[in-house]
Amino acid sequence: MSLRITELPSPNVGPRPEGAVIDTLLLHYTGMTSGAEAIARLRDPEAVVSSHYVVEEDGQVFRLVPEGLRARHAGISFWRGREALNDVSVGIEIVNPGHEWGYRHFPALQMAAVADLCLEILGRHPIPARNVIGHSDVAPDRKQDPGELFDWQGLARNGIGLWPAQDGPAEGDPRELLGRIGYRTDLELPVLITAFQRHWRPERVDGVADAGTLARMRGLLAAIG
Image (cartoon, rainbow, N blue to C red; front, side, top):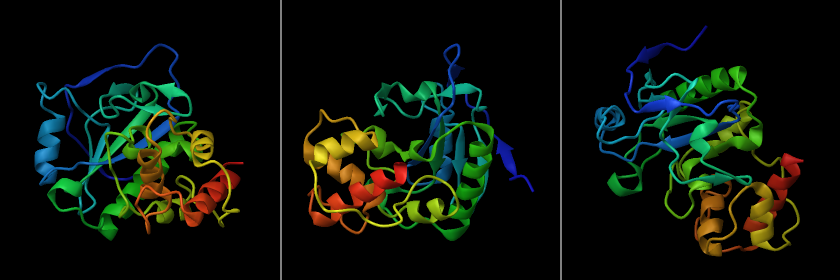
């Protein structure tokens, strides 16, 4: 059964570049005090921001921008050598107050809806697992979302994104490993490591390339293949 989606169009849209292929799925948290506040901002023409979807804490799903159009959610961004990810991505905003307003776990109903929505999107576009990422992955110096409380591992168990089957050897240059994963490498190393940890090592988010973090990087690269 298809996911039930409520249409709430945003004016903050534009065409994708000619020939653009949607190959990235980018997940965010809203980082505002309520879902209603976040949706209002994403539909405010003066804010000039939007996303394709919003998922409320109770599992309601809203479509603000058709997938064929370019939403304005990624901002200055980089992944796997490419910038301007709005051109080739679908963006999902997941209602959560975020680190500024009382970051909390994402409810089970919400995560189930996120998983169903992601699977539908992945069924429509050639998005590789390594390109299912968070805002903090593509903008590590600016963003923290969806953060270390987001259940990336659970999504991966459902065929959405990647999670290492096992860690690799705790060795290697962390900056070089992060570049191979997809991160930009011209930022301070602790910033990059923190972004990696928020997604793939949430039990330790301190910006330190300890043995466990290096092992997780190597395990992820093995999963990427």
